[in-house]
Image 1 (cartoon, rainbow, N blue to C red):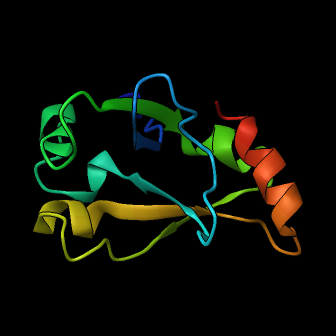
Image 2: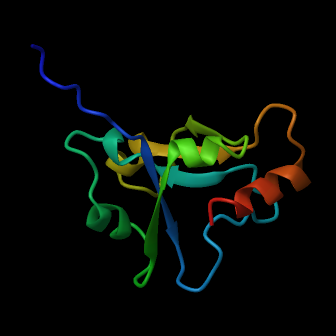
Length: 113
């Protein structure tokens, strides 16, 4: 009998300010930055991610499947130069689905909140 396969659930982490919407698209932005904890070896920790941001920031975990259920895409992209190397490597963006206009994208982003 073979060993049971381990189910892996893809998760991304969003860094936000307390009391502020975490998945709000700002003027001029084309996507929402998130991090794939499994994008590093060893995997990124919550503390490691938070250390790169303002004190008091919080992390929000969402499964990729929940994001994609709303027609959104999670695309690996290089992070900003100001981020530590491991976070740059693990950086992704939540982007609009194919054919999704900006108003529909903004509406879809409210769902993972």
